[in-house]
Image (cartoon, rainbow over all chains, first blue to last red; front, top):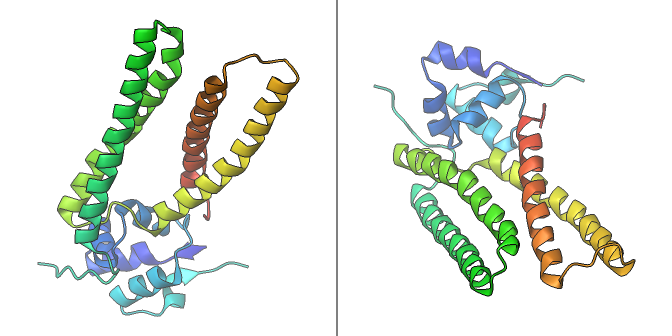
Amino acid sequence: MKTRIKEKRVKKGLTQEELAQKVGVRRETIVFLEQGRYNPSLRLAHNIAKVFKKKIEDLFIFEE
Amino acid sequence: MLEIINIGGGNMKTDKIRLVLMTVVFVAVIATSALLGITLWKKGQIVDMIVPGVIAVAIVAIFIPFMKGAYGAVKKGIPFEDERLEKIKTHAAAYTYYVSLYVMLGLAWLSDSGRLNWESRHYLEATILISAILFGLFALYFSRKKDF
């Protein structure tokens, strides 16, 4: 899985810690998400998409 | 200044309570290990103190940095446990349970076949120690696993 979280986060001027705080997870989870090494729950994906005012599919790219 | 709005549903009050409860459990485990160690010391079973000693040292070595980080996180308003950590813990616990069953079965076979002649409490201590090590190893594996 690839994500565009880092790109959107940097564009919005947020640090990993601030994003973590906004969506209620640990900073490490944001690190793993950005590296595409963690499959988030639908709720977390929704919350992250909400922060960036994007659709989930705009941020998370699933590869077949 | 950035507006911090927690939309993740995190509850800092619950986190603080959980942290206090974890500290109580941590102190209870250390106290129990110390009591076991003192009892064995009084009985003169110095060698038998190794297993509870290793368990206590391992718990302190793992728990103190964890609790330090957790207190820091709660102070900053960040949850110290989240869905990823819960997932890692759940997977590690499940795998530990399966493997521990095999370990216990193996120890039972070794004992019944006469290959091991330990006291019954040694089997229990060995199982606790192996389970704790397995949990740590599985947690480490899942925390580094790709696409988890």
